[in-house]
Image (cartoon, rainbow, N blue to C red):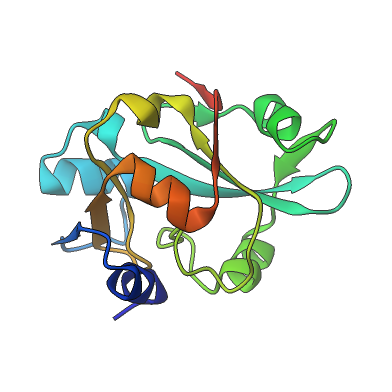
Length: 156
């Protein structure tokens, strides 16, 4: 059981766990999950950690079909610029390994932003806290549990 699953169980929010066999040669974790589970890629979101120009880390959650717009994330977070955090830094801050970083149950509470496209979905999918584990849940529950804000973050 991962910290992400514990958060959901403690809260009582409805969710579903989806498990697949992770291929270590897969070039993109989120796309691998969508393909392996037969999910609409626009409903599968990746969790990315960025460093803002003021030194803070922030979480951007965007569909795997797009890229995180770092300028949009910086603006949403009240910063001027953002760049992707180093892998080791992201893993230390979240307590998860790359490819398994969940927005839920992170070691440190980071400012979190979800791409506005999530608002139109009945359910979305995020990492469950390890490679090969996805969580399906309502976008509103994800936003509430992460104390996140919606913002246009994705470049498709």
